[in-house]
Length: 393
Ligand code: APR
Ligand code: PHB
Image (cartoon, protein in one colour):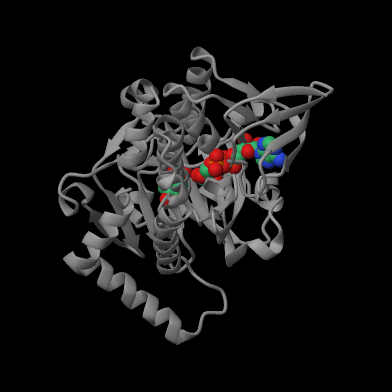
């Protein structure tokens, strides 16, 4: 068995693990990242695409702001359509000058991987059988297999950045963890295609046939989603069927200008809200999707990963650089306070904009009133905008 030593062992090289690793690396705290998949697989995953300002600032701090600022798109607003009506949410005006950055998670990951390699950070890809040990005791360590060899990583702290299906949360005894979950009775069918976006801003469409979203990765690459049945399979949806269903859910004047083309990625994602409490177990910290999942409406998943990283980074910096553990001790409380507000917001957006099977007529009218009120009132629009650009860290 080969033994490695580091200050923080990070499980998972998704955005959480890579961002935490880079921030720590840059202040001289040593990390090793253990990632189950190959680098190619990590770089090929298509996920979210809207970054809050707090995340933009953290990426700048991690030394990966350059390509984001040159290729990402700053959006000062987005639209909500309701049947044939169009409403613009002016984020810039409603929040006193705040905006979001449209830049794909795939690109964020690529930038972080390159920066880690350039700054000498150690990442082991294709690390199998990752197992966490003694995180409640004095000798926290992680064992795994890398390239056919058994490896033991000894560390002071473990950061569980290994996503919803990772090993970290599962290694905590059930009696020590409390989980909260809501599964929504529909999914999102998403496609990526090299066609110009239908509008220069995102469009969230609430329609009697179901929700739809027109998003983008650049001015020549579009990302579109439609609400589908929870049990649907990707094979059952041809590109033609997708585009025609999307068109029907958009106001006619927008649908007419939609450019269609072949998709090069097509997936169905289930929608779920999930939170695990607490986010710390002895010397193990859960970060990002390992601790919580939100439905994609409102684009909070990736941004929550970034705010967790911010709190954990502050805690670890205090401990390693100043010998002060107070922020580390506050990690779970600080992170969860922000997590629950984003869980509430994404649940609210999801509930208001989707069509629920088995809804009573009363519930349907209440949601119509909720949406109408949200779009009429400056106060509710301001609350929507404040949450969309991201609550402060
Ligand atoms: N051992 C090592 N690595 C693992 C293990 C394991 N047992 N299980 C999972 N991983 C890796 C995955 O392969 C993945 O690369 O952990 C990483 C987790 O990354 P993400 O799932 O992307 O989670 P996170 O980094 O928290 O990113 C936040 O926000 O937009 C949302 O879901 C979206 O991925 C996004 C997330
Ligand atoms: C995306 O571009 O993938 C996206 C954008 C906004 C969302 C969800 C997903 O709310």
